Length: 139
Ligand code: HEM
Ligand code: HEM
Picture 1 (cartoon, rainbow, N blue to C red):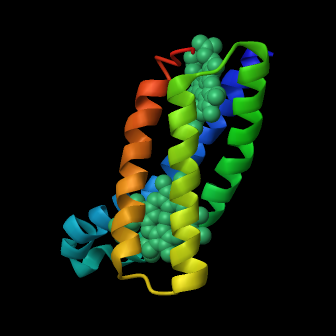
Picture 2 (spheres, protein in one colour; picture 1 turned 45 degrees about the horizontal axis):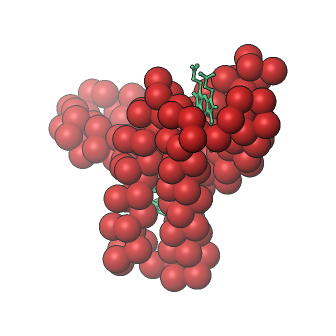
């Protein structure tokens, strides 16, 4: 069961990282890909295709992450105890997904204050996940 908890935790972490690839891929595109010579047209086209796929689908990684997180958190709580850092990570993950859903489905505007909020939550989530993995901190 412990292995299952760890495995589910790793799956949640993979979902969080896949969501954050949004930022990383755009940054790499701005800093490096745009400056490549036209000789690399094939590579540029492939990169753009991959980037577009990851950007368009990052919300699904977020939704999948929330589902797996529920199983990971519940199993961990029932078998080991309540993790404070895990709880904070779960709160941040939920608010990140809610703010993203608000911007995407309700506001339908990708350049306003919600995006700064969404980006800030995503960054905080990463920090807390990095702390949670080595330090579950049981309460
Ligand atoms: C975004 C949310 C979360 C992520 C990415 C995450 C990720 C992980 C990972 C990767 C591990 C395995 C660490 C290892 O191999 O030693 C882990 C362990 C664990 N997590 Fe989470 N977790 C999250 C949320 C939660 C929540 C909500 C709880 C419970 C309230 C929780 C409780 C635990 C516990 C108890 C362990 C086992 C610690 C141990 O056996 O040493 N996690 N988590
Ligand atoms: C853990 C979950 C999530 C994380 C870590 C995350 C992370 C991010 C980050 C870092 C950005 C900023 C990209 C940039 O600066 O250009 C972003 C943008 C965005 N996110 Fe999320 N996100 C998550 C879930 C979601 C969900 C569930 C939705 C919608 C249902 C969503 C919708 C959006 C939209 C519409 C944008 C702006 C346009 C774009 O770059 O795609 N996000 N997200």
